[in-house]
Image 1 (tube, protein in one colour):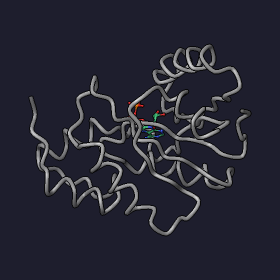
Image 2 (image 1 turned 90 degrees about the horizontal axis):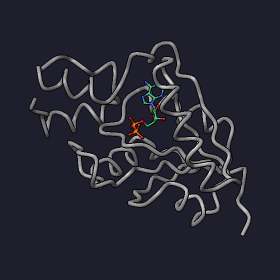
Image 3 (image 1 turned 90 degrees about the vertical axis):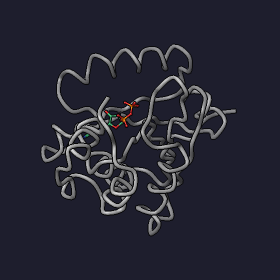
Image 4 (image 1 turned 180 degrees about the horizontal axis):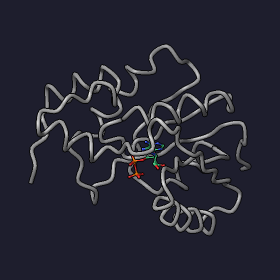
Length: 165
Ligand code: ADP
C-alpha cells in the first residue's frame, strides 16, 4: 500500500510538551492536511508522565484543531507510518547538537522505510534552548515555567511535581 505524502506525523516523547513542540505542530499544520502527533509509549525511556497523560494533555491543547490526531504508539515509528499510510515524518531541530542524532535516526528510518520522507523543521529562535528535561528540572526547583509550556502543562506539573534523582 502506498503512503500519503499529504499526511504527516510528528513523533516524540513529549514528556511534557513544551512551547517548542507546540510551535512545530502549529507550523506543520500550515503545510499538511492532516497531522498525527505520535506519543512514543516506549518502556525503555523513563518518562515522568504516562503515555495516557501525555496524550490527554496534547488532546486538550489541540481540542480546537480537527486536523490533528494525537495517539500513543509503542512500536517503531516506521511501523506507525505503514499502519496509518503516513508519508512524511517531521522532526524538530534546535542547535547543531540535535542534528547529528536526528540525521542518524533519519538514516535508520530511511533504511527501514524508503518511501517515508523525513523532514527537519528548525526551531523558532524563541524556543531553541527549550527541552522537556529542562522544564522538569525547573519545575522540580519550583521555578516558574508558565511562559515555556502551555497552561494545561503547567497545571499537569502542579499536580505531578517532578523530583530530582
Ligand atoms: P524524542 O525522545 O523523540 O527526542 P522529544 O519530545 O524530546 O522526543 O522531541 C520530539 C521532537 O520535538 C524532536 O524532533 C525534537 O527535536 C523536537 N523538539 C523538542 N523541543 C523542541 C524545540 N524547543 N524546538 C523545536 N523542536 C523541538
